[in-house]
Image (cartoon, rainbow, N blue to C red; front, side, top):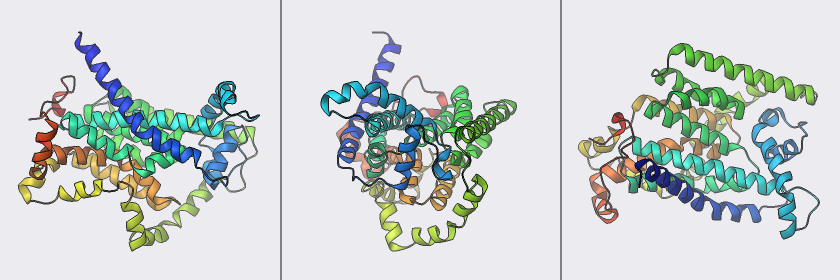
Length: 357
């Protein structure tokens, strides 16, 4: 059997595993959703139906709602056989899109962990730490657009690690269109994407700015501009930083945010046990610069957001890689590695920089 076919089949299996882990929990959220939607969901439901008269915070995040609306209209004939209705199944279309996008993100989380030197078994567990989280189920089963941003961040981290020039440029151009706050992650591409010529990265930034301006103009032309402008809205979010920080550092905030990745937090804590040699066995494989910059961008998202724990899922690439490396390298988990039969050999198609020593 050709090697390229085997590789593609293995990647497909990882993608399907990520989807299987997401599907059941997200479906449970979908079918048990309360009738009263959140403010965010009401906005995205309206936008999926072509109504952009929504709060300015959500007004320009049109990509996923428009795709979900088109998908809902295309599958309405099939869903009507199961549950007759005169309205397109927009909630179901968001569910399908969110699960698909987060499954792709899960595949990239696995590949990123592998590129850092983790074996396949620990890399799969690292991926599961993210896609099995309650927050992943939450944003998959509800009418939200965060899945696209999680995928963009995962693609950015993977591109920086394996030096994928085309993927990096695509993320720079498309990320801010999905959600304007993705701009906070662009310093990662500018500072650690030096494998792409600077002029190409700057040109991609200009392309991103052009797309964002064109998108704003198109939405404003279709629906009168909101009473509160984007700049005023950003300033209003900025005023929430101190109150959000106070909440984050409170026992309640720490408990809620700590619950995002659940008991996998114990794996992260265990990684810092056992002395300097044990810690360096896995921590030395992480790229400190990009990792810290990604975490800083995630913290900024949390402090600016009205739902901090949801934004913590953007740290998925760091969490998945750290969990995978701890399980693969830390002495404490040697019995687990024997149980898994974990091999230190990485995928042969990864660049040399991502291979295990």
